[in-house]
Amino acid sequence: MSIKQSVEQLGEYQAIARILHNLFCHYPEAELITSFKDNDVAATWPTFAGRSDNQQGRDALTAYLNHWDEAEQLMDLKVDYGQLFFGPGEPKAIPQGSAYLGEDQVHFDASTIALIDFYKQHGVSFELEMPQPVDHIGLFFSVLDSSFAKLQEAATNPDSDTDAQQLTQFIQVLLQQHMLPWAGRCLELAKVNAETDFYVGISLLANDYLAELADAFNVLPMPRKLFR
Image (cartoon, rainbow, N blue to C red; front, side, top):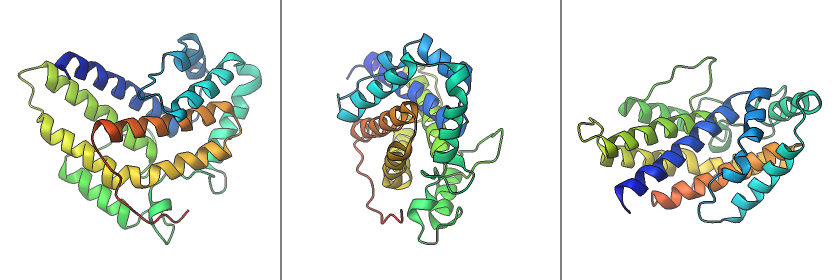
């Protein structure tokens, strides 16, 4: 793969990570959904390897955006986000890894501590508008966003201080040990419990994106017992 192609692919990966970070960390806002429709996000979303999740996700997103009406649908979309990822009550697709990896079902368990230690070793920190558990799926996408930006900079700037090989290994471990073992289950629960085509589509596309990253970075998820 040439450097130009590599940079272009990393640009796609970064853009999608940023979109998914915003979608999973925040309640939906009308401006964002309208921009998705105006920019035809469903049609321009990368097809990657042509997996079924990708096609089904783009179809569901297209169906939703084609009939988007802020006055009639925004509140239902917010309610759907809440019941899936936030509450009130227990969300249907809890977005924290500890809910899947920890038998005790607490928000701060051994897997969370391991992730915090991993981030400290690599100098990863967050500036958040509102507190979020560090193992929130949306924050994983934020870390991927910044990591892909640094890889692009390293590929295009000979004076970059970024060690591309070390950063690639960081992404591989992040995916293999900390994210992929549970994220697919979270996204499956989101897909089956979503009440709007929007979150059905986003869940499918997020799952396809993680499959793409696993292939691109030659990663097999570490086998872990899941508790939901």
